[in-house]
Image 1 (cartoon, rainbow, N blue to C red):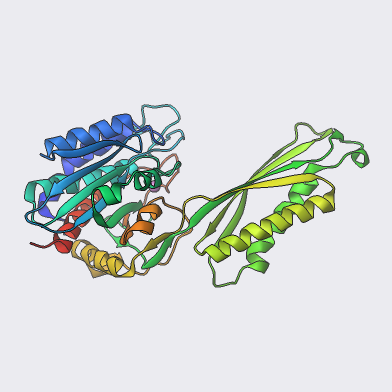
Image 2: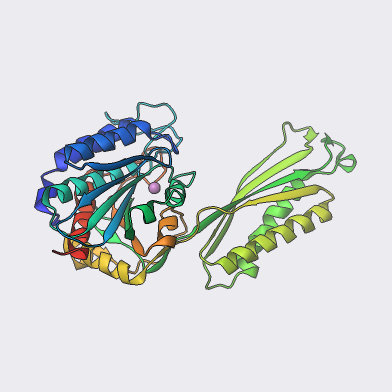
Length: 386
Ligand code: NI
């Protein structure tokens, strides 16, 4: 794997940073220890312009190149997940119920590795904006950093980010021009019937039958209402109701997710959900209402920047190690908010044969850090040549 030699030499340090971060997962906007660790490393690298406290614990740090040129933003996410780690690793989470199960410890480490190299070598003109964000998993930290004005304040012209990918060879890359990650909305449905004895259903209005009817009808949105060439997922992910075998419950609660790439499809789904909930409620004689929550928008790569970034990745991984047309995925990513405002690209770097993202046995592969850091560093040297 032809990573940058100097960055390969950082591997013991990057591994130590990553494993330390793995022991101290933090959630949402509360990435205080993580941010302090990042700032301490940046200072060690000789980086002096460090802006802290953006979106609570976000950081933007600037590296000056040699001579005038534009500013390019490189982004890493820092937050972890509210789940119990089951890796048994010596550097496992020390915090009960929190875990770096999406590899954001590795993403932070890759950007630190690139920062160290770029600060030491400065073989570029213009400036690099290192963006370390909290609250990617939930809370939209990227959106908050955009709203707090980082793109204008630091005059950032383009933005790039990496995510690790279990199941893809370590050090290989993939991406897609245009849509790469979906918009993620959610909905809650509250159903109220009339509870009573399980042996006398005629005297009740059963919210369970209404929930089942609604769940079945919702499955027709993808199969009967959506154009077959438009990507769409509608999943019911929770139904909660009932307490015993001899009680018809009074209420039921349902929850689910909607993944789209297209605003027209998103609007169609909302209209169908409303019609289905109202129609099924009438059919079963229950009261039902839905709350629909618009979430992260679709992550849309700029086609030109994506091909440029793929070419940089080929320098690291070779032609066979880069898939530049991998197609979109139905996951979501709040880097979408940065890509709505500036052209750029989001890529994946292989994490090898590991447990999947958000699994209790997942771990970032430390071998991937050198590849990711080399990609970021090379991207800056190619985009901002002396
Ligand atoms: Ni993630």
